[in-house]
Image (cartoon, rainbow, N blue to C red; front, side):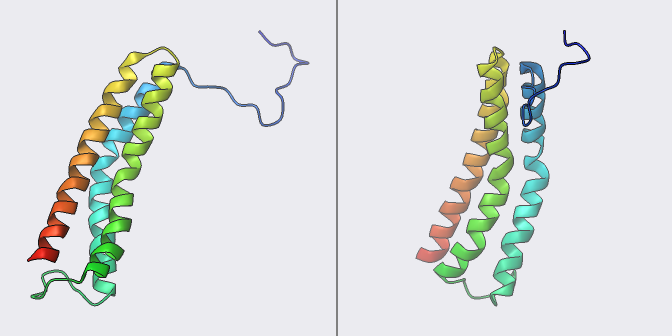
Length: 126
């Protein structure tokens, strides 16, 4: 217990306990839902800005796929990165339940990335 005269050192912060980290990891997993929509908007918006509107008849070039797909994938993967961070922090603080949301986030984001890469390769090959 601190007395009235004690002060924290400048820049010192309290480490959250494991239960808080597990909750933050699950909230990060939930963040994959809006990030999906945002990633779609980012990808389609960049492609449209580069002259390839959605539903166009000709396939986009490789550089358009890269320019639009890269930022879109980064937007989608960001909540998964946060879920892994908080899940690992919870496990380090003694709560092994933090691994579950991290694993869910990695599987969902990884599947999304692989499907998009396969789709891009299909567009480029066909």
